[in-house]
Amino acid sequence: MLERYGHGGDLATAEERFGLPADGFLDYSSNMNPLGPPAAVREILARYMDEISKYPDPVSRKLRAKLAKKHGIDQSAILVGNGAAELIDLAVRALRPSRMAIAAPCFGEYGDAAKKAGVPVYEGLLRSDADFELGEQWVTEALEASGADLYLLGSPNNPTGALVEYRHIQRLLDSGATVVLDEAFLDFLPDDEHRSLAAEASTNGRLFVLRSMTKFYAIPGIRLGYIVGHPEALEAMRRLQVPWSVNSLAQAIGAAVLEDEAFAGETWAWLQSESEFLRAELRKLGFRDYPGAVNYLLVRLPDDAPFTSTELQQEMGRRGALIRDASLFTGLDHRYIRLAIKLRAQNARLIGVLREAIASLGGSGT
Image 1 (tube, one colour):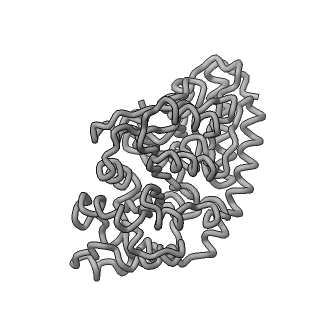
Image 2 (spheres, helix red, strand yellow):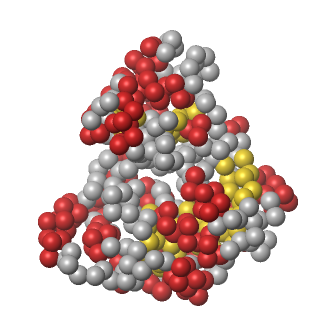
Image 3 (cartoon, helix red, strand yellow):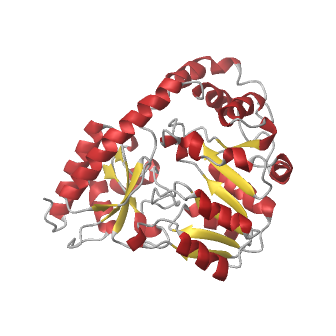
């Protein structure tokens, strides 16, 4: 299994499994911005030797100040962490819910964090005939059946790419529950600042917003994310966090990339063009893509496909291309895969490898 450790982008496992060098794969299992990292990252790396012998700022003051300006909030409402995964874990442990609800399929770290904390989980399944969108029916069923006092939801959700409408979040809050909203991929939308609930979370003791900086800026190797919440509500998470959780290199890079507005504009222009191209090419091969405005696609295999998502992943891997077997997400089966969106030359190459793999597995490949 390529997702041996629960995630895509595991090039070391791919190298072991398929016998090809790690840097030789066309990696569509990991959804990073193919334009990045921004130029400022290289500049910071070049001069970092002068800083490596010093301790990092234990509370990430410079980065928090810039994030506060971005969202129009006070920096006391921001906690920076070692990637979104650390912050998900901190949130669950600090909030100590009696029961947690998630909308499946979703990011596996949600359920894992609850299990580590000994918290029972209600998994409300999203429906394929509703394009896996979290709607009024899901909220009604969850409120009636889950018994949850914490909802951990993705918007955009991973792997579906679907957004959660504000009215549904408000309804959950009105019930007296706490909501942690994972906006890790929201900055791929040009109007993310208007859609984000970060400002509201900064003054609401029962709403928290998670953000990741690694996806949009293509810096997953340094691990960087943050959570927004009422300062008093964040205090329990601060106390649980390991000292110096965020290293000085991550802090410096995070502060620098926030100033690169041109990079954001280039990203939005690329994504619109390449999303349309990749969707159109996949449909020609008989795949069904689901609505989503981010840098990855949830895709269903052709109805007449004589192979599973696992078999397709293996065949693609042998040919040097990695895709995500979405059957490993709760609520999906062996008819689903997840694909990143990359640059035109890479997307065209992916389609070519897909066509070859489908033919090899007995499909039409047309």
